[in-house]
Image (cartoon, rainbow, N blue to C red; front, top):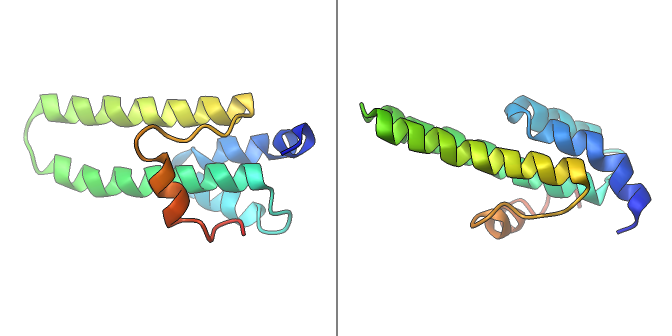
Length: 110
């Protein structure tokens, strides 16, 4: 992938990590140009967002501050990793889950 493609996709890639609404905005704005860099980060952000919501329901049933803090720290680190990757123009997959997200949402951006 050339540097021009990365530069064009940086803004939408960053927006993709700003909640699920940001992911939807980046997805729909990327439909015309089909920037592969943006598509990569939309898949990663969508996977993180959906996983976050599904695990949040489970964590909310516990009444433990330790479990809640571990949950928040875990997802904060993953989101920051994705945001940093998008800003620096790299296609780093989210640790542990990135390959799964890319395979699960492979139709996005094709």
